[in-house]
Length: 337
Image (cartoon, rainbow, N blue to C red):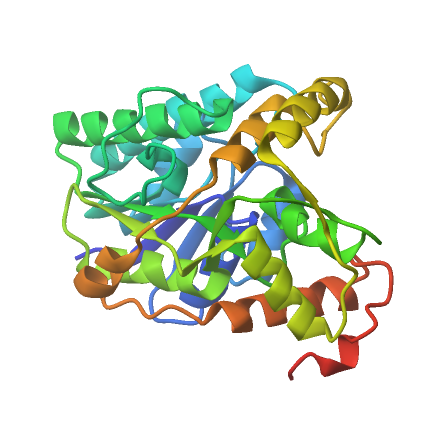
């Protein structure tokens, strides 16, 4: 069996955490990097950089040469993309290329990082691997990942590639201050945060990495594994944050119908700006909420989830220490070590 491992997306939050784990083990690891700077980043994590992108077939062949395992983590994860077409191309066509090149290189197994968003559960239900898709999409991101997952399964079946998929929910932990981490930063940096009743599903970055490793080792070919450590209402999340930091300003509750109409109006204005925090897709996603059942990964892979309190504790401490929660939190010393 080939001993090498190839990783796409090694400069990202999940891919970088994955590289940090697997480069400490036996064997050798190569990682795709789109630039020399990215190459320096993955080299710093202990991997051999391969300069190229998801559409550079020569780079993909070079990276996969001698590898028995490929982790395809790369993709565009943006709820409010400035250029949606580029996200579709990277997530869908880029995934098709990786699976095709894995077949060409004779890779033993591909672990593909999909998303819990592809579950497409009906509003008010708990999503799992067998949930029927609602047939509509809340965002371009959700649609692009759903199409990418479909392409991955179809291409793997056609070319005989052993494919296992992991579907993480909102991944949080030290090292992330963008994307869905903004939902955590918002109440930490506002005097009177607004609160809309919804559900949030969260996965610790360490559990996300462990899920990838277990999927590679124990996952059933052709199966997807939803990874989710905890689901909270926004009220429960705020209460937990308040307890962790030792004090809290009372949030202002906003009725859902007000949040929908007002949020959409504000989102349309904000969406015209570069890298907007708010856009119609974000409003739809927040109001829909997500409740996921991540128990199959426990039963089928042996994954153990980190308690949500520990995840938020570590994340807040990192955000404060690195200046993202720029106002000193009154109860910061209360955070556990």
